[in-house]
Each structure stands twice: as structure tokens, then as C-alpha cells.
Amino acid sequence: MKAVTWQGRRSLSVEDVPDPSIQEPTDAIVRITSTAICGSDLHLYEVLGPYMHKGDVIGHEPMGIVEEVGSGVHRLKKGDRVVVPFNISCGHCYMCNLGLQSQCETTQVKAKGSGAALFGYSELYGSVPGGQAQYLRVPFADYGPVKVDSDAPDERYLFLSDILPTAWQAVEYANVPEGGTLAVLGLGPVGQFVTRIGLHKGFRVIGVDPVPERRAMAESRGVETLDYSSDVSGKVREETLGRGPDAVVDAVGMEAHGSPVASFLHRAVSLLPDKPAQVAMETMSVDRLAALHTAVDMVRRGGTISLSGVYGGQADPMPLMTMFDKQIQLRMGQCNVRSWMDDLLPLVEDDADPLGVMNLVTHTGGLDEAPALYEKFQKKQDGCIKVVRSPDGGTGIPDAYARCFPPVTPMTEPEM
Image (cartoon, rainbow, N blue to C red; front, side, top):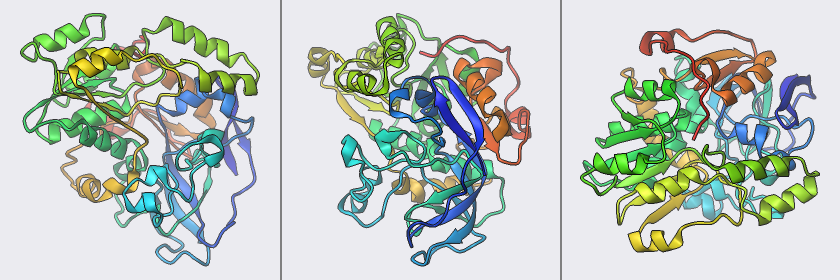
């Protein structure tokens, strides 16, 4: 089969790799019909290379058709249409029973001290082949995959694999009071959904991002937006009676713009051999913390910061005196995808599309276009916000995007 493979820092290629096969009775093989590039895939592309191996199959936002099931799979059959959550969980361990599927004790990558295994996301999370391919082996198939009975387009359901439940969890963790104000740092795909979910829940939402297209997309949904600048916290406080928002979601993570020292460290670490680079990642402060420090400064006293952006450093400096003095609550973690399905499926299947799942994709293409699309997504060229690919191809901007979101002038400003 064809698959998108990691070859080195900022280097991907589409290669012929062996077809997956049933390895355990609880496995299923899924023929992929759609898969997306996630913002956290860019961390593999740029920062987390020391944990990648040449030829690794990447991708963790897939859906498709069941082609084969193991003898221990009873809930699915050949021909079923499914969305595959990015974290691999058993559904019956202590953590899964708590609704913490991202901490599944059956699939925890204990050799790395990490939580549940993830599709296509480095040796930190099990080196499990990912979904940017024609076929995918899915462990624990009686629990993980979400069955889709509708014949609606893939885009309606695809984002249940990761970014929609990730955004939902971020808002739930933000603990915004009724009628309160939520600020969102970073208006990439997850940040866009965070703003939409906040509006759906009746909050006032302020989005912050340096990229005009991203602000324009959020504004088209009714979000107040601000450009990112050194005094953005003060501007938000001016808009919130001088207090700051009740909660801030950091939807940016480790590669935030505005942290030149950490940016230099990213580049320096990437030049080291893998083992020394891993030691550096695990013992140094290598995250760009501009967004997180902005969140600490911006949120009101007694407020909550919710982290959905991925961080990877082990010695990141944090302003603990300020955090303690302001009585800030901090919540974070990989999304527990299965925990939010009962909340999200009715919204996704609502023809009114209250969360705008049909109004997010800006670019589509086939697997062969993956290297170019990754570069375009990372550099935010041509208004690129969300990329969806089909193994069968497809190009251009989807009709749903063209109808709902008028084009804007392409820019190439960096993310926060």
C-alpha cells in the first residue's frame, strides 16, 4: 500500500509499505477514505524528530471502511464505516473506566513513561503505524472505532478522530462560568473549534492569532478577534472590565512564535544524533512558551487555563509566583476521545451543523501530495488552515468552504 512516511526533519515521502494484517484477535483492518493533517503532526515534522525513525508511517486523524476483523471483534463487521480515535485504548482497564482513555493502562508506553499509545506519533507513543495511508490496523477494534451509520460526507465525521473532541475537552476543562468570557490563543483547527464550541455554549469568545486568514475564519462565526502582539493581554483586559477572561485555552503549544531562545534550541537539538537529542528534550526547556506565559498574564484572578496545545519540554520555566498569587487553575492532557462521543455525535449529525464541521477544511488532495501540503500547512501559505486527504486524491478548496467562507488575501505570517 501507499503511505506517508517520515524521512527526516521537514522531509516526508510517499512510499510503498507492507499492507497491515490482523495481529491480534481484537484487531480490525480499515481501508482509509479520508485522513487529515493535524497541527500536532507538525511537531513530528519539525521538533520531535529525535523520537522518529526513517520510514515511520504518520497520521492520526483517519476514517474509513472496515475490510477485515479479528475473531475477537464482535461489534464491527466488514463494510462498516468508522472514525478511528487517535489514542488507542482497551475500554476495560482502570483508566478507561474513569473516562481517561488517553491514559489506558493496557496500551501505556511504559518504556517512555508515556500514556496510551497513539497512531502515527513517534516512539514516545509506541511507534504505531498511522493513518495517512491506504489501510490501517486498528487494535481493540471492539472499543475504539466510532461506527457511522449515515452516508453523509466524511468531513461531517472525520474530525471526531481528534480535533473536535480535543477542542470540546479544552472547553470543558476551561470551566467557564455561565455567560462568562473565554479567550483562545491560536486559531488553527483546534482553536477554531474551541471558539465555536464556546459560542455554542453561550460564552463570549475572544480569539487571538497573528494570521489574518485565521482571524477572518473565526470572525465569520461571530468570534471577536485580536492580532497577537506584546500587549495583547492588556487589550483583552480592557475588553473584560480590567479583569481578564474567566478562562484561556492555549491551542498553540510548543512551537509558539515569540520565543527566540527556545526556537534556537529547537534547531540546535534537531542537529544532534537521536539519543543525545532525546536526552536534551527530556532534561531541558525546549518549548516555546510565549503563548502559555501570555495565558498566565491574561487570565483573570481565580480563572482557569486549559492547555490543548502539545508541550514537550521537561524543564520549562513557569512563573509560579504569579500563578500562585493569581490563584490560577491549570488543566491539560491528551484528549480522552471516547469520553466525549455522546456529547458530540448529536451535534455532528445535526443538519444545522452548529459547530461548523463542514466549514473548516481549506485544502484537499491525495496521498501523493502530502509533502507539499505539509509544507504549505506549516508555512500557512495560501490561506491553509485544515488539510484533508483521500488516498484516491482530490484537489482544491471544497465546495462547503467556498460557500461558507469567502477567500481572503494569502499571507505567510508565522504562528504565535
